[in-house]
Image (tube, rainbow, N blue to C red; front, top):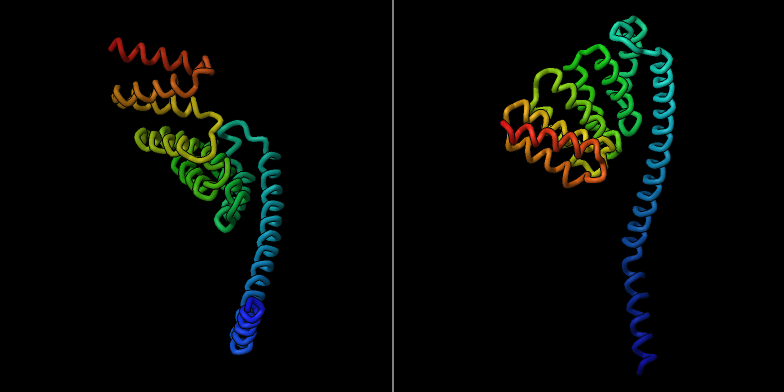
Amino acid sequence: MHNNENQSAAEKINNFITNNRKAIFTVICIIIAAFAVLITYLAISDSINKKAITVMDELNGKYDDLSLNSEEDYNTPDVDTLLAEVKNFAEKTGGFAGTKAWTIVGQIYSGRKDWANAQEAWLSAAKKGNKTYLGPVALYNAAAAAEEQGNLEQAIELLEKCLAGKFEFPAAPHAQFSIGRLHETLGNKTAATEAYRVILIKWPQIPLWQNLARSRLAVIEEK
């Protein structure tokens, strides 16, 4: 009886395959074709990324060779040429290379104290680098550019985004202190107090920021 059941099941499978062999063959072909397309896409993508990183390394080398120190250094024809080249590359390149390119654009505009364009560049870097450690760094610099323009509330918002990202920001205590400082400048004592207290709770092992936060809290309480 058991053998008959097994035979019956085998016959059913065989009959199913025989009756649907064209459909099964078509599905198998589709799967193989899709797999081949995926392999091709990954190979091309890897090649493109490697080329982009190579170009980015060359552009970064050019930037380093300029040895920029003062605002005057950032306003030379050589920097203009490099800026145009890097910006063009950044606009059409994604991933790490595109993010790194936008950081160079941001650095050049920041060196020129062109804060509006610097902020735009840093925000572009943050958008392209939201899946890398460069994301929070770019947001932090965008906040600094916003503050330079007097946009304190926007600077606070960008700093909060910087700290809320999935990548830990090395200068997180500084960013948190800046949030408190900006709230204090705006006259938001309650928000400033809350921001400073976050430092006391989250970074008790860092005396510098602990002391600075306590000193600001003491000043606020005296007012």
